Length: 295
Image (cartoon, rainbow, N blue to C red; front, side):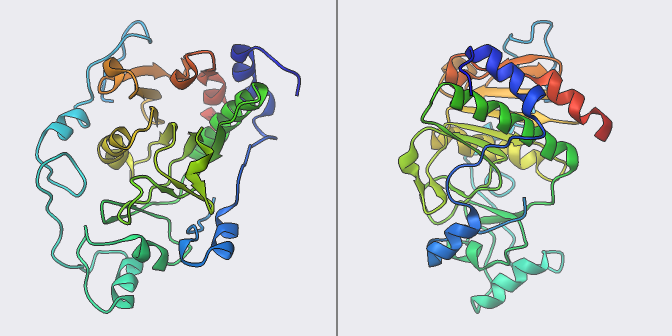
């Protein structure tokens, strides 16, 4: 690939290479499972904020996110207060959770699950484990996957044009965020610059950059629970893409002023990538055009 300027490269990649080039690095989840027994990766199938006149202005915190983080928790994994979990499995819990319960010979409460339970679940069930709580993840829709593909291509082409050491990964890929046995998340897109964190196909610790594309089934978790987890774990930048509102919320955790107050961009905007000092930008209007017929 010929060397381009950072800005031109990142803007052009989605338009020119959207359908043909997705960058994949490292071992696949299935390879990791074959190579590493119990440490294998679980394989899976592939704001209310008012927009300001200037897209680069800081906005007030989302009422569903930071307000919830300041209050006592009323659901698993939220806030810093006491956490209440269901006493036992009820009939409306997914069948695969009951299978894990049977496999270990006793009923487990939400909040008690571990990485071992996570790997004991069927491979065709996509879930996340956060602070001992198992969350079911529904299959993504076409527009979700198209956004993931476009962002992955743009970031990957930028990194390669600079001969960078960072790696770009589209989900699903297992991230043992807290380096413990109680949390395993699967971001939609991530950038990892510390290659020592990639072991046997799993990322141990915080990536540098994370994108989550919101869906009805994951929106509250992504806005509240994972926002807090990513910030506390050391993720440097977090994007939340809201297809319904056509907005992208950008949290730059390494900047104290933007760690809790996001910048909100529309789908017609050019969005700078903070971890690259704004030299890499994404023209989101190009991605938006690609998904307009899917709505």
